[in-house]
Image (cartoon, rainbow, N blue to C red; front, side, top):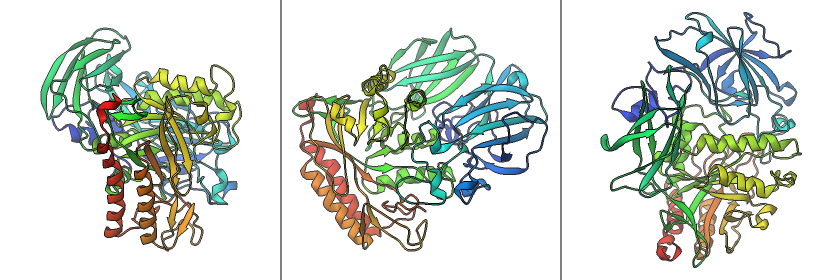
Length: 577
């Protein structure tokens, strides 16, 4: 089964004392993975043809255009905008249980049928959705049909860095699309009355605030137990649907250098789930200059721009180990932060970031070119889904609403003008900072928390103002082109081509020293980028994830980054509080 890992490690059902194993594998009695070979074909109509074998097959959950899917088109004219998926499966449900069908993400508009019943539809390419299928299940030969429509960059929706023409004309900073199912599809067994969702506010140094929702009725009490290394350190009960602040004795804080996580067991009636949290604060200090303060201390945030594309899976990492690999690599270069660019990743990626201690600045995916007012309702829905779906992760400390000039100029009418979008992000999550517009003209409007500039190839020199800290949201783009590692031989480009890996390491170290000299007023920087992506060859890693650097060159980069991060200690943190 491709991608067999349990897809929702922040909320796991099942028994066992090995919590790490439970989060990786799940409990077979509580879930079933539907990834694998499904029937598939281009759709000639959106009307379901029940009982009909489709004329092809696809490996779920890999996007249609990826080579791992088995159906990847070779030219733009062969891209499929409308498609059908079909799976038949057996399923035995235990007495007094319900069965939920989960889709991690499908790009873009989806309609789902089971055993001739229309379960519902979903719009949005980056967020998950679910159906209670209990009343439509049989023990044998269930027929699941999924219809998908994805116009990619030719539609009105946020599509991130996907570009249909990239199949015929690869190059630039946009890439092959990722249509259809691209995250795990799975079944979950739950009691007839069950915990349906959690909201975890961990923006504190002493307490976690938890809100539990249940279904089908949202009332009653929930028992909780906070655990540290398997030992219960706090327990009690709370009301369903009401926030409960749970103090943590002798609390240890989450940070890049010490990513402390606590386990949280929640029980409601006959249902029980395992969650986790990490206590930390990330706020804007104002004196003597505005700074982001992690746990009341200024820590310089030095990170990669990460686009999370893979050469074989595009939006979808080929394995869970591959998903985790980029995070480990980021820390190996001495960095403590990632700006996830124009994409929302699967839940397990954030789980790995929580564990490894990487601070995340999360982008809202944009309509990258050709935006119109038709974008706005889709953008708003996707923004809400992104924040609601990922805000339980302690690693995320900042949301980015807009990028450069991609689409913010169409947001001119209240309540969803640029200010309204910024305020919406704050309302949805008042515990995190917001970057209104990374590197774009709306930054000058002075909304939200960040004065964020982009400057290629060398880092610019932004300054804080009375309400915003200064950040170089993108710089770099150095490219040592490694023969034999290119998407297209001879087809690489970068913002600044360099002759060798040694030159790339040395120039980068000089850039980091420039930032170090300006660390008295600049608080964060984002280097482009983690990996090469198709013909954009400015990563520290090649697209196949091999490193461009030997051990000594890596050390040059690591030392330069650590000097930048550790320069934070030269500033008295208490004057910012």
